[in-house]
Image 1 (cartoon, one colour):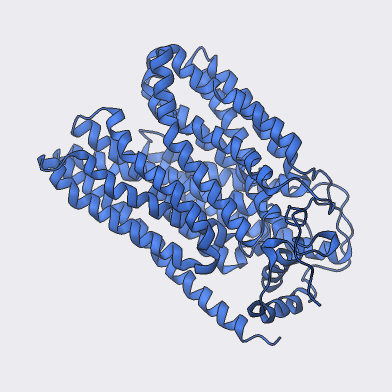
Image 2 (cartoon, rainbow, N blue to C red; image 1 turned 90 degrees about the horizontal axis):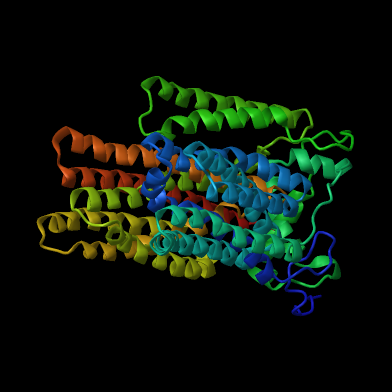
Length: 561
């Protein structure tokens, strides 16, 4: 017997109680407003740093922490906030994060010294770290299949628009209001955006405050999903959640005959007994794994800290291997916490899925090099060729526009093409970087105008839309929506740590070569070569994961119906 065709009401996301909730468009708008706010606050900083330094009489190390302090507090809060949102309800953590961010923006706007400004940036990083995982978790919970892919595509478009408009907004505010008022307005402009986000979040996000108290089979599922059962349960959730309590089928959950065999296999796997002890009593109190939070926080701090300063003392680099060792201890602790029947900070079953592991490696490698391109490009154009900051901004503008458009197109086809889209995106990235390397010689000699760089930059943007949001969709595809906040925060943490490493190493190579022999062209090409090599590494892992997809498709086709 077939289900009746979906009605408009059935096409809306459903609330945890099964009642019709607000439209998917309203949820998505609500999530994108604070994301845009946080990214504007991040992207305007590079334009404002010289002006801030003059206004507050700050040295370079103080100005460095305007950027680094935000990145550090943001990275530290990601995973604990994701776990808290998954456990207690994402809406209130989302709203609390916005409120904290607004407080930081107000303090920054009225800062009387560089120390006060850096403290405000730490507060803003905390707020952003609280709300970012909830965005992933809410998309994972309320959107399915093609709708989820389109939601992540909209997220990527928002990132591109905010990144492109931030420097322009900052420049216009400084030009219109003057240096001192201009940079302060750059922070205060986030206040009305934040208030709007609070109102929208309060009115349009479904209430999910109730804390579940699992018992019996549900308790076992919460703690001890096996690798196969976790993936099967996530796929079945995709099918089941769209139907609601009334048995209607969501428009994003239509199943054709080709899916029947795989669906039957998933039901058989998901019905098996989990590993956790069946006698585990119901939990009445919130358990956030404080030891796990401490271990992960210290590990992230020790790994990121050496990369955040301009002149890091050699002894401080010893923190990096210590941090990696702490990550190993954290992984051991999480497995132990799971074995004794307690809910770990990061459920180890998330990493038992090969698609999630590969996606994490891909995004971490890509962000080491991908973000560094837009640092070395202005350095080469401004410090060596003598162009103004606005001139170098023209190069990144077509990349942002093309990324915004490309992400929307990719969101419509990623589930059909799978990792093939990501493979094509990284291949295009490498070709564009090679074009930069070749064209640099002609720009250096004066044979070509520097604006010729806009052509490969546009292709980098197209490739970006084919890689970042599709990778998020594919990486989170088999993750149980109950762990969506934590899983999304892990992806964001990989991005932030990759960015911290890349923005320290790649410009460091460029400055090192310039200091050694003064050859800016060689230094620029060497930096681009490193970025291309990193893209090739991400491409290799994407090919590996594509082969896994092919094997999984064959196994699904051969499963008994």
